[in-house]
Image (cartoon, rainbow, N blue to C red):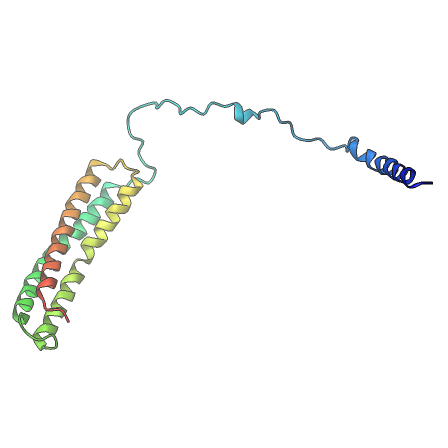
Length: 169
């Protein structure tokens, strides 16, 4: 047999061996036709009403009142500590950083900052309630948040002013 005949024979045998692979395998393959879900409309449904839907975990008036009361009760303590801190910072004015008066003023500022804790905690809780309300807070929640936010701003401003007045190392 010459070389061409051998090649033709090998090609024929190879085709015979591969031919069963082209037949049915018994498996079914998924259709390429659109699935039922792909036939559904993608348009947004029309809203049923213009009323905001209340959140499932909307804050209660009692929770709002608790946070407001905690912040309001801390207001008096802050006012007392603010007066003491002003006196301490005033007496430390012009004194060296390592003086007794400067240390006493730093301690007074620390106590003052500590009294801000209930207000910042109440504001953080109200912030969480605002987020839980999903952008549609109740009037009571919006009012409480505005009131406590203003109180926090007022206290932070007073604290920062006293801190700036004290000589820093």
